Image (cartoon, rainbow, N blue to C red; front, side):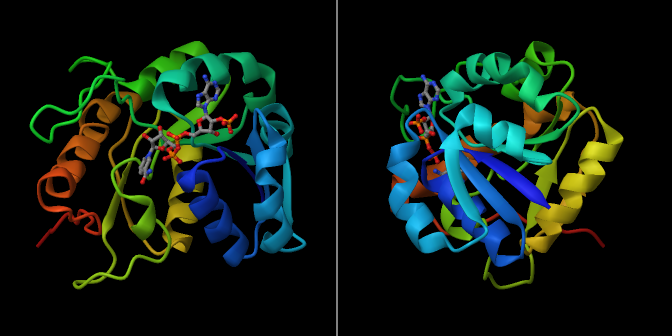
Length: 213
Ligand SMILES: NC(=O)c1ccc[n+]([C@@H]2O[C@H](COP(=O)([O-])OP(=O)(O)OC[C@H]3O[C@@H](n4cnc5c(N)ncnc54)[C@H](OP(=O)(O)O)[C@@H]3O)[C@@H](O)[C@H]2O)c1
């Protein structure tokens, strides 16, 4: 599959490398594609770099891995390039204000989510929340006791969630499909929970697992 990865940060790099490892073709995007040259140089023949728009147009599936506060405006600007595609939204709505006692501050409220804002801004795209509740170090082929951890996903389009489930499973995760976009109101704050042991005890390698009988 051709996957466009929008993001020059650690999440974009981790997921791009993960999808390349599983045999996909990847184009990463940035406002400044030049900053991806070193990555492209060592990522192999199936890797390309371009602008955000080029990467969005390239992908049959697109990964959005940008600063949360920039995500809605960027998605809106890309509009047509995202239409009809599954868009994996990894972004967290982290505010610029610092954490309070180890708890991140969000710019969204409790009955609201970044995923819903993205879906409202670009109705023709099929957004699916995934990868937002784990650090980049465990995103690909997580190695943890107790078997594969759980990736919580949601989004309004059944077909998109099914497609993203397959990709997330390829990267070594169990998937818990939580249904429509409103479930992002619960998934996104898992980022806050995930970060608290990091800020308090410098533990950054855990992941969540839903235990069912
Ligand atoms: N770091 C983690 O372990 C982790 C884990 C789970 C989820 N997340 C979430 O994943 C997303 C990506 O995180 P990250 O740590 O890889 O990188 P990041 O520093 O949050 O984001 C870097 C990307 O954001 C883009 N960006 C920043 N400001 C922008 C603007 N005003 N307009 C357009 N694009 C802008 C940058 O574009 P340029 O390429 O043009 O500079 C770059 O591609 C975030 O939303 C984060 O909350 C992170």
